Length: 589
Image (cartoon, rainbow, N blue to C red; front, side, top):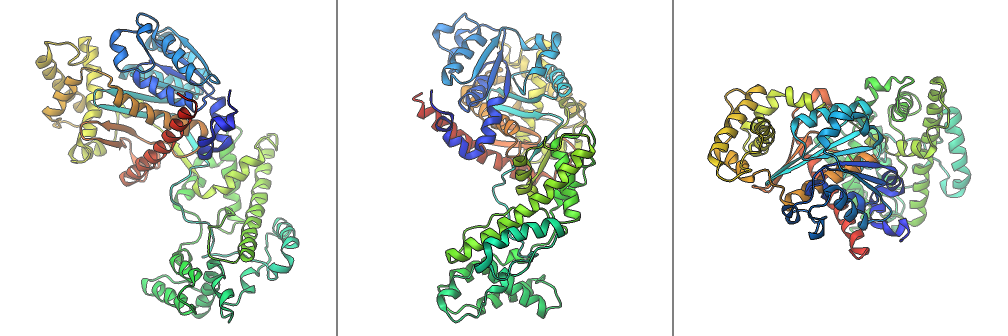
């Protein structure tokens, strides 16, 4: 068997050893192992999930062979859970796999405590009534839950849990933490005394909260040597020029459009040759000088959250948030701890390394201050001071500006009391009308099945009657949601009946891929999981995220954020998919 670091090499580059360790400790339960559920588990098994339990009470039929790649002719008449489990086990013998021949609906009704043993439950192809019951069970047991469903050319994915906190959110684009708008004190004689200074810097900061100030002052931007002039780091150029500007403008940095343009012209005037890339970099990065000081609105919301007032039941995350809040108000002087990394830039090696060490030293000093506060809070709560590992605190400090907190409503609350204004907006929005139409119809087909003991279009010869019944049922669903007078298009209702509740492999593979991506996000606590309900529209080749709860309740910033988050989710999905496919290929499968 291949060594884990070799076996999972490509994905380790995405979520690291800590993320992989979290996956290998996780236990995932799958309800229903049709193509949607099987595709979800396939991705997780290839990724090295710790253990899987497959729950399905049905037998393999000939029709299953056309849409489930985890089955073959030898499986016909056998337990579907057993057959799928065996095929999944072949993909990765390091994963512990077991199956239970039982219908999920019966297990939900008769043995709700069964689910408490798992890290996460993937519920595929459940109808509305079972979704609601399972959601309550998993909430009570603090078990993460993901619903995944494919139905003809549509499908959905929905996450449900009380709260999910993310330290390593890994946004695609984020402003470098260089503090050009608020530089801290630096060392004067960096070249001669750097090694000694690092120790002095840390000691000074921990004991007094004050840092020596001098690094930028060792540079002369008017140096006549053209080689030295073109190898001054742009960070130093901007700090020096910002100081020059503030001295001439009453201590204020550029704020108006005209002032910002004037500042850039000032930078250009300092160039002595056209090939000075460092000054070009300074001009391009000048906006970092104008950035507002202090913490972002999102981080402010987190430190002001009621959970930041910690007690004996608080998680490690909120203990660290409380320490962060204290740090910002004291040592941080309104700023979060420094990340400690700098981007590549035109510079001499000596200057770059020295500058890098200055940033790293400040970040280490901030980490020490936060760690002391974390330990003090733990003592107050009666906890073991070392129960939060140093590595976790360090990661928290490094990612403090990017923390995320996600909270999800009960699926029952969404079904019974969605945001009517948002629902009506989606229904009248040309870009979203089909997605929300499928959302309504997926609920309507469950109500249809409960009333008529079959899904619309499932049997030949009753299509016209089923279309009429589904239309009436959809109007009823809309009315119950408070959207009286709203209707869905005839074409969409006809298509839903034409689907006949079929699981198409292509759609199931996509839905399973999205679901497995969200599982990995939740288990590794890296990247930001989707909020809201993901809808795939295979007719128009669209994937959209519906936010059907009040924004203020969830701390959600609006539809534009949903679109951005969906884009990021797809970029993450394709990165993870590529990693898993490469892993599959390297194993000769």
